[in-house]
Image (tube, rainbow, N blue to C red; front, top):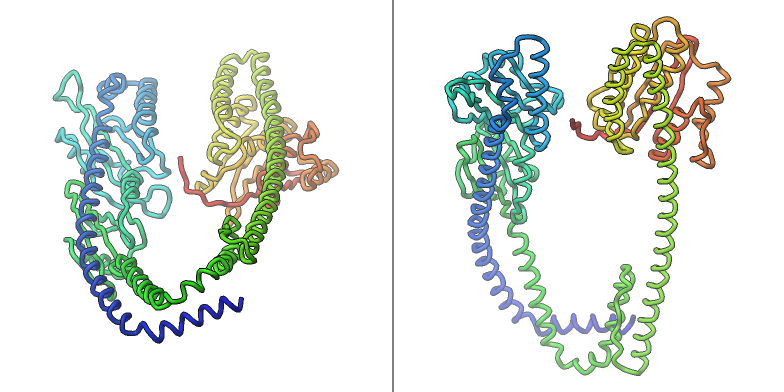
Length: 600
């Protein structure tokens, strides 16, 4: 290390002795070049950004035109038009009209586009709708008196309801805009048969804006006529947010100063849609690369001066270059880079040192590669074993459920309750449609839909002897759980409570949410579980088996398998608890709360 330190000290003495005058000249030239480049960059940024947001405005207009065309799709379905044109006269016809129109709304107008929140077709007699959200439009009950409905009836042109904030999924407001169009009869063009209204959020426009690539320090905003920010690509500067809160609008391109910071502004107004597209660039951030280049230029100038001043040391450096190269490469090795190689140019002691260095790094790299491969193989083996266990447990539950369901239908047929049996088969078909189309992990809402179908099926058998209610918080609907986790708990409640209780059986499915966990509880008012049986069952649930795939006891396959599946997926973060007495049984599943955004 001593020669390396001596080299650095020698360079320092040369810089102090020779480079002061030359450095002053180079610094002046570098600074003037920086000022010229800064002016050029500012002008180019404003011009390029204006072109960018104009293209974004074109894309937004194209997107809105597609939404306008979406409101024309009812004209391509004669069955929908016929249902709208001829008002149903009885409940059966009304139900059929609702099925046809709302089925069209869901399959054609809503499901293909994720940004569509709600679609309505309304006339003076009926209102048909399909929504993805828990909350309907605010004026649902008084739509016939609303301005958009009456204006649409008076014009054949599509109407645009400017972006505004309203509750969609919960208490937090969401940006919503609407497209409204009048529908007329194909047979009589002067006859208005309805008004179609499409509510959409800003996810579609956000996708367009997310593709816009501004320069460093760039911020893209979409602002409505009420000065509300509908979209932002990055946090808003505090000064701008305060100014907008006071009602000050950014009306034209140029420069502004906020809290002592300079910003470049580009504005594009889309008056047809009551929005402005605003691009902001922080002058400081925009100029940061130039300032960095300025410092690099100064450093380069100093380096060049030093190289010029130490030319007479070329011969010494020729003999010591390979040694210093090895020293530099050793720093890379210290940082973990073992791919570096030293060039062997001589056969002397330094050449031998370079060759030994290369052999050392190659040997270390081989050891690391072997260890990484071994760790990868061990991980894959463990993962495949867990996956095999998971698949085995999933396959154990479905035959158990199918047996109970088919047995119920069989009893109805044997009792010659053919109408009830037909309804049971229809419910069973709907239930299987839900079960067969789910993956191993599904949302809690889909799991509850399966439970609802199952309870309706079972209630056909027990009639008034069975009552139930499902009260689960909507904020949990998007939580992912293994499929058929809750349904076996309800099945056990039916088997051990309803079947053994001659009185009325009541089943409650409720949820409890905390900051980072939530629980689903299934309780009944049955005779409960015998203490010795309960103790044995709790022991088998709480104590992991050495072989997680070993078959469970037939009588408790649902609970034990659920516990095993949850243990495989969540480890110790999940639990299954049973509380039972002579007045009923409660089974509670506790899981981590991931707070996924609610989707429907």
